[in-house]
Image (cartoon, rainbow, N blue to C red):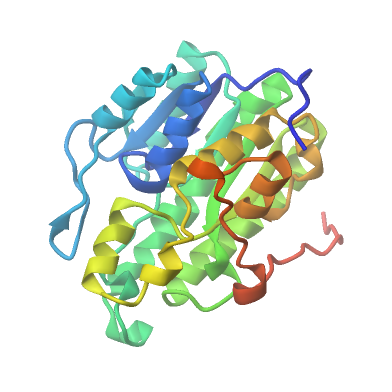
Length: 296
């Protein structure tokens, strides 16, 4: 299945947390599709990320440069998603400069170095709970300011990057609660947005081939190598998001938690060389299905 060619292609996107990793890859894919992509991070020019003392590299400046090279237009916006005023200013800028917003990808998240350490949650730093501020609450705030732009145009897609950790034990309770939370955001936001032609979805990504996962494999040799052989590039997920946003049928998906590998099969999207990343539904579980009851 391919997007309806009569559907106007999305032109403007915001991708949060795009200095590196998943956010950067999604932004690059949207840029390759010719979009103007606003990318956010805590610093416009410096690389602030590290894992176990190993720098992860990447910056908004690099992301924007690569978007431009791919044929899109990248715009770097320094934004700490703990600061609601900075988030509001971001979308005010989009409204003034672009006059529209077609895609919001809520990806920014506070990932602590101890996330994949062994032990109970009480044995790890309390700071792991910061993912509930930048990762959960931050997605609500960004959607709050993005929604009016989309409602005015009566079109748009709000996407949350989530994972199978929403439904199974993965990296502890804070991580799991954040993922389950954004799934519920998508389900409930979709109901409010339904009359306005704006879709909201949460996307379960498979294992991601990123700078962070590379360092994690070095830190835990032998634990993730086989699993990551079927990993997904973040660009793969960006192509899926663009296809969904371009699909005239996207409202039929609104409110759902979707597995990107399964969506990719529907849209005929593959990794380089035709490789099809697998769905881990049978191994790690299925997305929660929202009950149809609505208590207003």
